[in-house]
Amino acid sequence: MTPTQFRAPWSRQLKWITTITASLLLAIPILLLSKAPQAQSTLYNVAIGLPPATLLLSALFAIRGYRIEGTNLFILRPGWKTRISLQGLSEVKSDPQATHGSTRIFGNGGLFGYIGLFHNRRLGRYRAFATDLSKSVVLRFPQRTLVITPDKPEQFVAEITPT
Image (cartoon, rainbow, N blue to C red; front, side, top):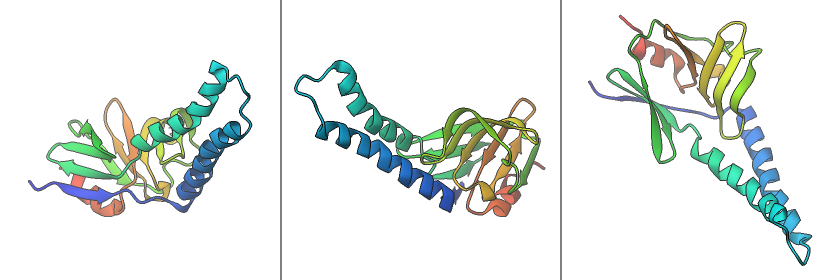
């Protein structure tokens, strides 16, 4: 079976959140360096290094796309990928409203993606690997729920629907 690949387009909201947040994370050390005291404390040096480190770490977890290979879904990242077994997949559907009303439990809520653990009434607790929530695809397993956002949600659903 030939692997099928899908892009992970960014929504306008994600572009704005990432641009504003990245600008702030880069501006903080520049501002601190411009006002640097003669004797810099360890805390001051951490305050200079932490914002760019946060930006870099977040960029490493960005979602570039999705690939289906046999019974595995790969979340494509810059330089690496996350493998998710599709064994036991019970339902897959496109649902642009799936993430509405969600609360972030742990993860990234908009810097290079919506990535991590979230919760809402509709899905319960779910793990997201998303970049454009209007393209949400919900994958349900007996013990977990995932949300991804491929560029062609309906085609992704047709490709992965359990028979």
